[in-house]
Amino acid sequence: MLLSFARFVSFGLAAAMATAAVPVAAAVDSRDPGRFVDSLAETSFAAIGSGKSGASRSQFRAILAQHFAVTAIGDRLIQRWRPKISAAQYAQYKSAFPGFIIGTYADRLAPYASADLKVVRVVPKGSGAAVVTTVTRPGGRPANAIWSVTKVGGTYKVTNLTVSGVNLGMAQQADFDSTIQRRGFDALVAFMKSRG
Image 1 (cartoon, rainbow, N blue to C red):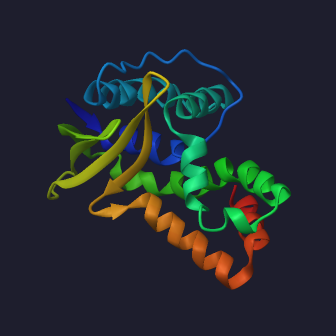
Image 2: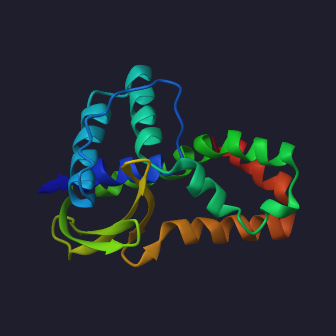
């Protein structure tokens, strides 16, 4: 199935760390990783395609929080520093994390608005899988996007995304490490808040 890359990736990138206060019953098929990714894209389109109102944004965030391993992703990005920070610093980080990710990645999705995504194959990995997709922009060459998913409590959740060979989780972790080494953990959190 061909999908708008903006619909699919906007869901994944923003979602990777978003949280929500508005519960939704998203109709996502979690019988297998391929169906999960496919129906997740459809559900996200229904939410973000309804406009830019506050209600649409809240619904979008709720879907993201429901279908992405938010806590695991956030913790993975600071795993090296977790034993060295206080409970208060960790709480501040967790509070700032969703807004930061949305602020950082939302504008990066516009160039992909006219691209199409096709689910190519599913490669089993442990309790989850890598869902391999092909992204084609008009007049451009196809590029790969790989969605890492894992089974959590009977359903699949997205844990990472790799686009054109760039592992977004590892790239973000490297950015966080660099900021903490140069300026400290509190500076990272302050920066995240300023971008959120």
